[in-house]
Image (cartoon, rainbow, N blue to C red):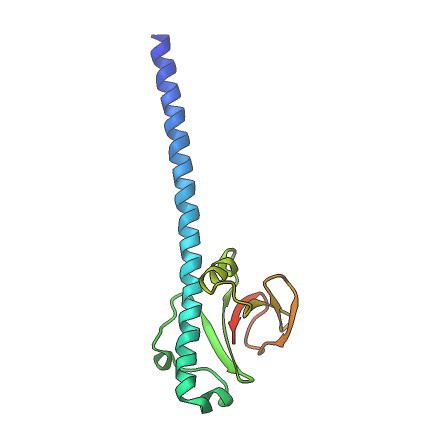
Amino acid sequence: MGWSLSLVMALTVALTWFHNSSTHRVTVYSEQAEMRERAWEMVRLMNGINDRLYTRPAERTGGGTLPVTATGFRPVYGTRHIIAGQRVFVWQDDRPGLAGALADITHKTALAGRVKGRRLLNTTGQDTGISVPSVIPDSAFVYFN
């Protein structure tokens, strides 16, 4: 009788541990998947804007933003953009894992960073020498060209 109770308790502990570790893995994978989706959204929006500006160069010098219908892509995660100083800035609120996901997708692009004091810092924290438009908030994660 005592050995059967011990066996049931051991099985319960093992199954609980397995369930908890599986739940943790699923949570981590879903967070990583969301960051990859967010990064892909930034890349798709940048590509849509660049395609449009290639055929309409006057819009690059004019600055501002393009309507969503002009890019052929509707952001889901609140990705925003602005054209300023002949550059396109695409940004989102920074989240853990977003920089790494964008680096993976773009093969470690150097055209990404975080905003601090209206200055763009690269992913290692060094100043790129680029001032960002005032509409881009501090601590935003930016992909630019």
